[in-house]
Amino acid sequence: MKLSSSETWEVEPGELVRWQPVPGGGVVRSGAPVSENERFHLDSVSQGQPGWIALTLEFPERLDEEVLGEVATTVIARHDVLRSHYVRTAAGYQRVLHAAVDVKEALREPDSGLGPRAFAERLSGSITATCDPFEPMPHFLAAVLRSSTTTLVCGFDHCYVDARSLALLSGEICELLAGRTPAPAESGLEALRRVAEVEASVTADDPRLGGWEQFLAAAGWTVPEFPLDLGVDPGATADMHTMVATLLPAEAAREFSSTVHRHGARTYPAVLTCAARAIESLGGPGEVPTVVPTGTGAGPGCVGWSVGNAPLRIAAGSDDLFSAMRANTERLAAALPLAEIGLTPVYGAFGHLLRPGRNDVFMMSYVDYTRMPGPHPGVRAEQVSSSKATDTAQWWFWRDADGIHVRVRHPHTDRAVEALGATLREMSALIAQVVVR
Image (cartoon, rainbow, N blue to C red):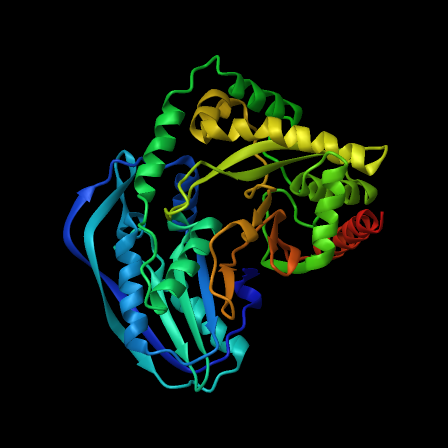
């Protein structure tokens, strides 16, 4: 899996075929509550901010469009989350579920003659217009057909999918196209309902709330923001831009993991340590507060936005780099249980103490796609995220068969480009030192 964003996305043009999912059967109110993550996201969508994620699959052959349409129908029908949508009510947002789905051809256009960048911009506009979570089945399903290749594009509002979901869908689609039946799907709505039950069981004396209190108090009761100046005044935003870099190719990534494991650390916190030390070297703090997305225990066969949030202070460490890596490995292990309670009890307990800060949150995510389902060999998968105005940086580290990579989304200012470029260069040098040692 590769990661990119819509402002840098390119797609080789060809004949475009689109399908429209159509709900069938009855519609019922879902028993899965709307999470705090979903509420924040739906508020943003209601204010006109796009929030979609697209999965693209590049096949080294021209595929039959009728088969592709059947596969699209099967995938949407398999997953209850994809058959739901949201409605606004006086009490807030409510999720409703459709019993069935059909997919019909909605558009067929010849090669537009556009270049790859302009064609991708056109696709992005169509995805933005389609992926409205307040409409039934708001999914963008299309294929770009060429003489000897095919690009399948599946766009979803973020409320429906996360990185794990897209990896699962990439494998399912390849299995279906190969004429095989994937393993039975699990209920994403049931997984979300179980998470909500855990949140509802949190009491005021839960020690995990105490962990959040310590983190927020140490941060002055503001949510984390990237600690270097990115050239955006408080209250302002700027257009978003993306940096993507390979930190370690495949063999070097294996050497890096082996080395840090021998020194009692783990790969993810070791990478975070190098990031924190790079930030400190450029004038940042000795401890970098951030939020790390985590899994919530959703089953391997369910689709949905099933992500928790763990507060973490990453120590840059003034002594040996491996000592800092071990310390951050312990800190991450201690922080992960804090994500289990969800954000609802956290805001219920401390929301009145929080001070206004940035609109976005400085997050540092890590996904190891080598441990997840994925597309078949020879099929290239890419996750494309929508662009919107922002005021801080968000980092996604990921590992795949080609190594360890990073995508950084940031305000498109000269200062941000300079500061983040320098951070990545310093971080890469630190990581390289670990491999050499």
